[in-house]
Image (cartoon, rainbow, N blue to C red; front, side, top):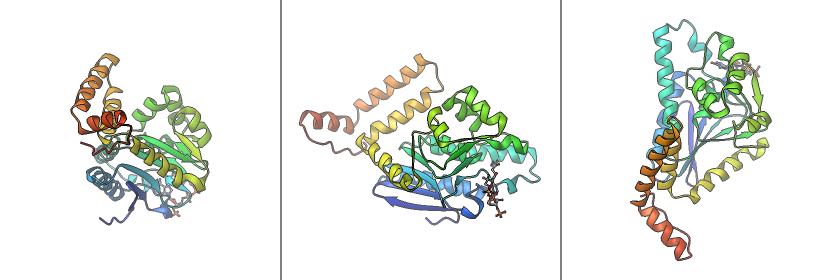
Length: 260
Ligand code: COA
């Protein structure tokens, strides 16, 4: 499907979703957020897609935030509804049952930082900058940022970004655990593609269960999380992928996973 603000393309079994409003530093307006949700859901439903990479068009920004123009004259109830709609789309990203990577090619501010946080892993170019500057506009993040940032980097570092409106560069983001790796700008696409393809070593069925266990478990006490893990471990034992993976190991051959 063709979108006005989002480009979609495949590289082997990796679906690339590119936010495409470079003249506005890929700022997220409502139409774009809806298109993004649709493109991510379509990638989830496509059995030919093993992993997804989300990036921004141009060489300056991943996403420079929600479109500030849409905030003008926004009534409180509409603002709340806008936040809930954006959160639902970003939750589609976070809850996808296949790996989603952010390839962060510049500014990841506000909603851009939140989008990167919703992804399962982040690869950044040395030009990336992360921040939640909404406070400078008299707002707070509305697409999950206050929650996911604190969970990923801890309360103190999250509050540093939230309360100063400042940014961290790629080197600091790596030290904080905000990104998985940092590469030169010219290497970003190949590095993200490589990491996405590396996730193909794991059975798609098991990968989906890992994503589920980590996503659900992070919100639970350890004992409850381990119950979820054991249940999903049991589910894996019912899968064709588990039979194939163990048989392939014992027969000293590469596995042929089907994801079932
Ligand atoms: N919403 C709407 N438009 C945005 C935008 C946003 N979040 N971020 C950038 N743009 C637009 C600018 O208005 C400008 O449009 P114009 O050329 O029609 O005037 C264009 O993108 C280029 O941005 P510009 O500010 O000229 O680039 P810069 O290199 O000087 O600065 C930033 C880059 C990212 C520092 C700056 O654009 C910025 O601070 N953006 C807002 C970041 C933010 O607060 N995000 C959170 C929003 S909730």
